[in-house]
Length: 141
Image (cartoon, rainbow, N blue to C red; front, top):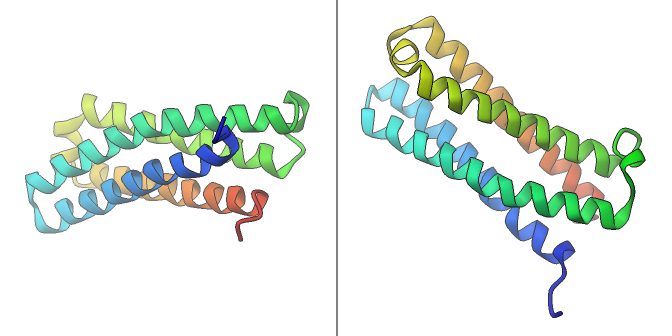
């Protein structure tokens, strides 16, 4: 086989990182400029970030279990990297669900919108932090 999952995983991870961060920028700009089109772009960027993160997480699990075992999850940098990424993605999934269920409340809720954007920013920051740890584990930085 010309490529292994260890070589494919680093290629897949860039999609959710780029899509989630771009979605956040669109959401912030939509709030500042009061443009619904930017909010729609943020919604679809977040959706595609969730879709692409499925492949990144699955490939990450495969790479992790090729390198170690389940007992390494809580006592190794690769394990911490995976847990951080999984937690950030679950937070973003919950935010996406909230976004669908409470769209009008968030859009016109003033403080609710700021809380949503704050949690969204924290989640993307956490995703970046986990990605940095993953790059260190893979000795890419």
